Amino acid sequence: MRHVVVMTSAGAVGLLSMFGVDLVDMYFLTLLGEEELAAAVGYAGTLVFFLVSVSIGLLIALGALVARSVGARQWDVARRYCSSALIFNGLVATFISAVAWFNLRPLLEILGASGQTLEYAHSYASIVLPNMPILVLGMSMAAGVRAVGDARRSMWVTVLGSLVNAGLDPLFIFTFNWGLEGAALASVVARTVMMLLAWHVLSVVHKLPCKVSCQEFLSDIKPILTIAIPAVLTNLAVPISGGFVLRTMSQFGDGAVAGAAIMGRITPVAFAAVFALSGAVGPIVGQNAGAALYPRVRSTLTNAIVFNVLYVALVCMILALCAKSIVSVFSASAEAAELILFYTYFLAGSFAFNGMLFVANASFNNLYHPHWATGFNFARALLGTIPAVYYGAKWYGPRGVLAGEALGAVVFGVLALGGLVVLVRRLERQLPPSTDSPLSDAAVAGVVENRGPPL
Image 1 (cartoon, rainbow, N blue to C red):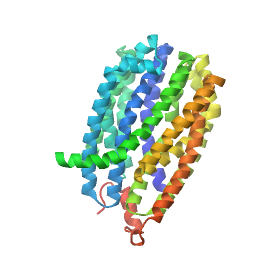
Image 2: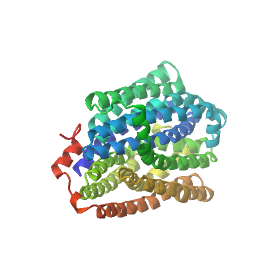
Image 3: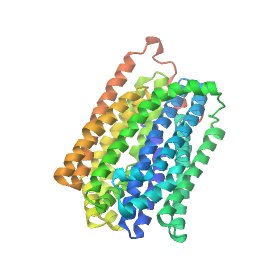
Image 4: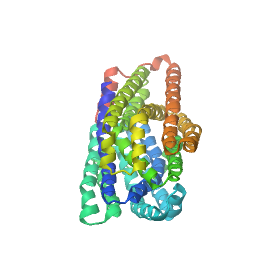
């Protein structure tokens, strides 16, 4: 539990600062008095999240390969995988962002944006999209830092980048009178700073990247893609279902979309520790699985789920107490306010099941069974979220959209957790007797917590 709490807390602080800045962005834009601005950020954010989700699958591969190599005491292999994965991630992110930038308006129209809201969303996304390779490389480097157990420095990379964003937001939006474009430019500068800081930690502190030849890079693509392809597919399921939710919500007007967008900024802040939990559990599971210590893997997962449930219960109480204040602070319209109150009072607790799915997917990836994560995420989207949202909207309007999304999380969060228990038991039974404990408990604890390779 100490490992889980320490790693999660460090990750949560970093994510809280990053998500908090997004929330501040939304607050500043609502001060400009145009509901279309909040809706525009919702559309643009959904599109960017869809594209970043592809790249997140790539950084998952980087983290899993590095963590398993460190756990098996193969530091040279970890360095080579890190370098090859960074190159590959940068190339893929550049290609994706270029394709999206040249097809930006049609993509936003597919999500349901129209009129002035479409113009605002296009303006915002056209600034943010070219910076996406920088964001992906920064996130990949931070994943490499976490993979060697250095959650603290990974946290500070994100925190400092977010502080830059928070400082530039009011300057660009109000002082320079750049409005929505100012918010986008502040994000661009902050992401660049975050990437530079992450590179310093990865290369100077941990000396993880190394030179790789063209032949080595090409040979490393296969193990990278073995994890990355199913991980990419896994992550695509979330924005696909999210895009369907937004498209469905758009039929109820900009007020409903604005309410959903506000909650879309509040939820990551409130549940930052749940998002961080998967990033914390992954390296611990990966390193101990690499050392063939499955009792530690089981203990990690048990404590992660306990932490998840207790944390969500606490946050739900806080959200219920602050619900009316949230409506007031964001000057929400009547329709937006109704959705915000409905979510905070009745649906926020369902996020515990999202946490179960996050933990299960991170574990599947680090146990070299990423296709399990793909299956559960797509099942949630195609069999859970999309049908439930469709009928929820048809029968109960915008409230039904939110309730349908929550229902999908509940069903498939439980199923994914059950699948993880089965997988861990199966892998443990497959161990030959001679590899039950190749490293001592003290040695593995040192690997998990160390700032570099084990001595």
